[in-house]
Amino acid sequence: MANMITAENVKFKYSTQGGGTNVALDDIDISIKKGEFVAILGHNGSGKSTLAKHFNALLLPNGGTVYVKEMDTKDEKLLWSIRQTAGMVFQNPDNQIVATIVEEDVAFGPENLGIEPSEIRKRVDESIKTVDMTEFAKHSPHLLSGGQKQRVAIAGIIAMRPECIILDEPTALLDPSGRKEVLNTIIKLNKEEGITIVLITHYMDEAIKADRVFVMKNSKIIMEGKPKDVFKEVEIVKGAGLDVPQVTELSHRLNREGLNLPTDILTVDEMVVELCRLK
Picture 1: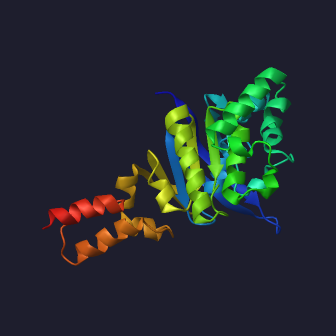
Picture 2 (picture 1 turned 60 degrees about the vertical axis):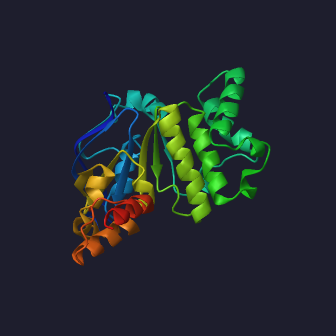
């Protein structure tokens, strides 16, 4: 399967006020396949959000190369195509809402692409329906809950027909209900619409839904694999300043107490099954 995003030996440094530099990305190699759902985890300052901004050319590498569908992000002539291919959703939905009515906000992106009005109407209706916000189409987005606002922001990206959506900690400011709404929307976009998803998060219950997980620490990728393979390495994950799913932690502790349980348990249902087998 073809890659949607490829990063090769990517380096990035921030300039500091004192005239020095801070390394944010240090020789990053990553490939994300078309239609894949990938989660990138890391403690604050690990480089995960900086990496996300490279995936649609908001930032350009100081060294190495990032390709979006084989388009080099450093090629200015390709910038428009890159950002149409890979849309970005940020942590605070209020920063992406520009209109006073939900459907007008969703129409903003396609209008700026010069899409025909009849096609915009179709895209807006379909996008709002995809995120289950049809009943709120005529509402003011500023009166919605945090989760609903974030779904409107996602609908605005969908309306531009991207093949990939990069979400930079989209649930960090939401309550548990809002987080669940947004995560369900992300999964639906990936599984039903075939959109490639790159989710930057520090919530383990979101990461376990991904096809693959990358763990970052000190500007480097230190682990990569399926959620079951990554989270069973409890000590390494914790060494990166992260938690593991609560059930995985429980399994890890029970094993140390002598119970013979699999080390890759991720959900309560899996735990119940394995505990019943011990009888």
